[in-house]
Amino acid sequence: MKMKLTVKVRLKQLTKETLFEAYKREEVLGYCKRCGNYGKNYSCPEFEFDTIRYLEPFNYATIIMTEIDTKSIKAQINKFDIDDLRSDVYNNYVKNKPDKIVDINNVISMYAFNNIKNQMTDKLIQIEKDIDNSVGLPPGSCTRCSTCLKQQGKSCIYPETLRYSLEALGFMVSDIYKKWFDLELGWTKGELPVAFNSCSALMTKEKISEDVILDKLNGIVLNINDKE
Image (tube, rainbow, N blue to C red; front, side, top):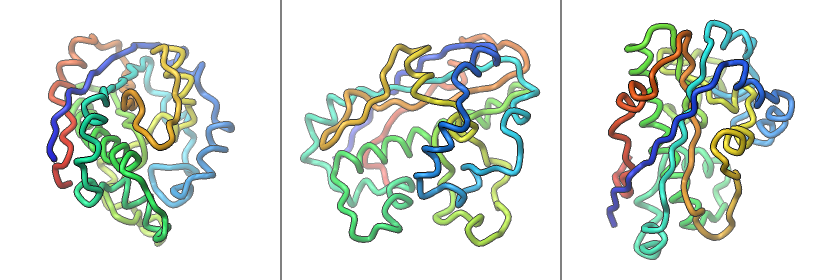
């Protein structure tokens, strides 16, 4: 079963000060501590650097919201095979849970998130090369390696592509969804959500035209059942 879905991209440009209205480091860190990646992935807390100081050089934040309507996926849900949809996110989720049963809805959700995360990371890194004094904050944690070398006490072997998500730096993403996109971040059980959403950001020193950023993000699509 193959499917190619359009990814809707929405932007919201904020001053850095406005973005910090969603900064709730201690509360977000509490959620992070419940995750298996906590302290085991170089893109996840705890960090050896000050997250506020990390963003100090920048004055503006362009929040990037991606949205994929799941209606067409739901209509074909019985035609998908879990073995064809295994992703880095899925493998990371189940590697310490060999007996965990993951239903097709969750597998597809992980696949979609992994697919968009990888594309967005690549796009943001390219934008950094094109726009001086900028840094991208892609969604989720890094899954470039099957097991992060942090767990072995070794240095990251891909430091040039290591980036941190908004939530990893202490921002409450659910507040960002609600405050600037009028979206409630909810969870569904046993079925797909109405849409797959993900939230990234581009931090810049100068304010950049939204049209310029959208043009550089052009070409993001979700290809389901492409082996990754």
